[in-house]
Image 1: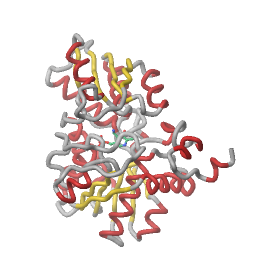
Image 2: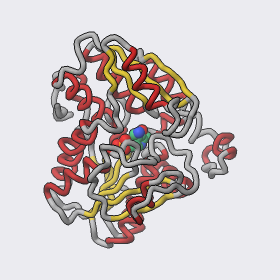
Image 3: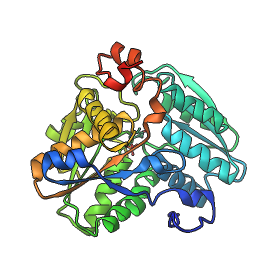
Image 4: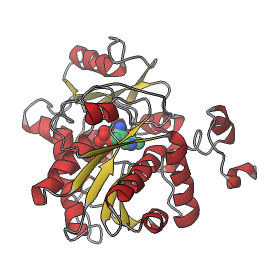
Amino acid sequence: MSGAMKTAIAPDALSLIGNTPLVRLSGPSAETGCDILAKCEFMNPGGSVKDRAALYIVEDAEARGLLKPGGTIVEGTAGNTGIGLALVANAKGYRTIIVIPETQSQEKKDTLRALGAELVEVAPTAYSNPAHYVHTSRRIAEETEGGFWSNQFDNTANRLAHIRTTAQEIWAQTGGRIDGFTCACGTGGTLAGVGLGLKEHDEAVTVALTDPYGASLYSYYACGELAAEGHSVAEGIGQSRITANLDGAPVDAQFRIADEDGLRWVHRLLAEQGLHVGLSSGINVAGAVALAKQIGPGKTIVTILCDSGMRYLSTLSNPEWLRAKGLAVPPWLERG
Ligand code: PMP
């Protein structure tokens, strides 16, 4: 299932998934006296960390006989999992139906349509509402001949992808010199999978949750109670329950990061290193800085750059949108 070395000729397109580089983040490292490294998941073929989960979920369903030739993959997603699933489905000859909250970025919706996925847009609602995009996707899968509900939130083939690939790559790339790992959660597959995979090698690696405002996991790991506070515009992260992927996640510490702080890192990575990433990546970097301040200096900390800023040109690079959300407009966008 894992990808081929990118210096060699890949035998097929799906083996381009994974084996992403780690990059040293100069600003965060200088500010903390730690080595802060980031896994460039935006370099996956579908442009996000979710390609890994998509491939594992589909191959696990094939192995279990849940997905038959010519079948239809149905998923509820903020977009990136859908993009990964559509790529994998195209490569393997399946149809894809994606249920997406209408509030997600136009770029992700356009990309899904361009890949041939059938898109069902729904109004955003609470998870307890039967009209929620996750429940809608389950119903569509049940009603579709040959339908397979990939169920990224509670299908643990998702976190297995990160135990078997992302965590192993990080361990090998750092030569085992890693003291901490942190990231935010959508499904929790990345945090739980990388956390479990790293702790297989070294129980002493500190695994930390980085939560946006509006999510309930910070309070769960801090005091055992799911409770949300505030609001975030970050797409793809912000969980309100303990998904099956999060169940048993080895979380040693937790941080809560405001959008303003995440966006400041998005702008700094762009201006200082030419790294153009989305807001969940900026929030992850802010979390890595917080973890470094807690356990550093002199430590090595790894986080995830989940997807590219090109997926959010109509929002994060749009001065009107930023102003409407009360967020900072970087000077280079003020130039018009
Ligand atoms: N960032 C972005 C942009 C995402 O789309 C997602 C997945 N929804 C995540 C982070 C979180 O990944 P995970 O589902 O593994 O928790």
